[in-house]
Length: 227
Image (cartoon, rainbow, N blue to C red; front, side, top):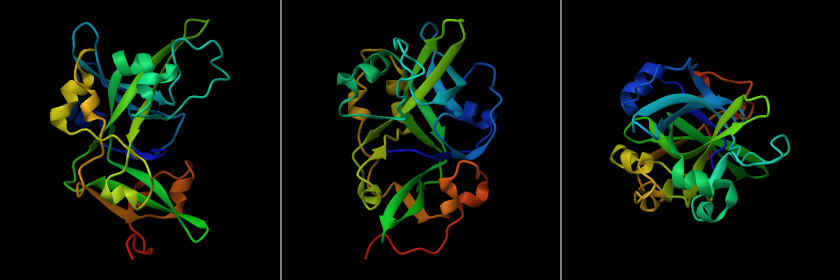
């Protein structure tokens, strides 16, 4: 799964990286993005095909739901089952997006406690998660735009921590994921290649969304993942 991540690049840098064209959102850096918070998302405009960078709320609120104040808002969608579930089916077919990140966090259970680890690309480049987005209109005509992150089976590095990992897309795959409805996106829902990620232990302060600063990504001493 993916329940916390860091996204601290300025909006200008994200826009250049993904080739977005709309006015830049007021994006604050975060080293501890948590569910229900607003975060940067890259979407394809349905008419022009241009890429837009916007702030959406993490936790998917389907456009068709009848009880928006009671329904669960999933932060992750399992790639193996998303096409069969009403919560994700329409968004997977028509509203796919990219979620920029610089690192993400996962917790490993060790001797009755949980040790957080940070995960980033080995090459140092930002991460692009595969995501889905929705737009819900309330009775007063206000709109909530939200997103969820796709997950898949873990690669070698992530299998030491958890039985799931977010779907990470390389730049050549972005047009396909953001593309037309009939694009061959299913083949992209796979683990990142073995050896493409680096993992290091971080302080447990990352467990609270009240803590937010670059020190959360600083490595600490912790038992090795492998014996």
